Length: 120
Image 1 (spheres, rainbow, N blue to C red):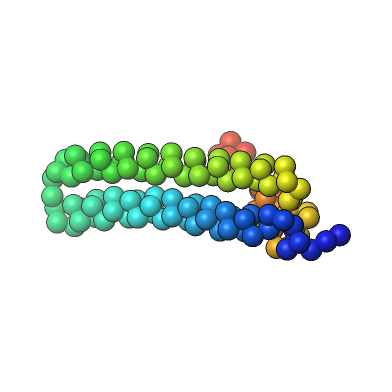
Image 2: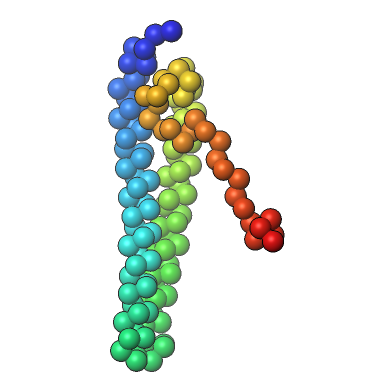
């Protein structure tokens, strides 16, 4: 078998993969930053004894921001899957690239998600 670097699209695959992973991290960072702003707002409001409704208009806007961040994240993850399908069309797979495959999570099955019902 040839080396992954011999694949004619190796450089392009690695470039796109790095950009996708950066976009995913950026989306997550936006979610975390907005959540931290919500937490800070509520804590300051409580710490200073401000009325519960005083920040409600700002929190409503932040709720919209979180929703937008989550929608963006979903779209990026879906695009990531599409890039994987494109790479496969050109013969690039996790198996053929081995440990150099840029998306290691694609090589393993996701762990089952435990639900409250299953945990009970």
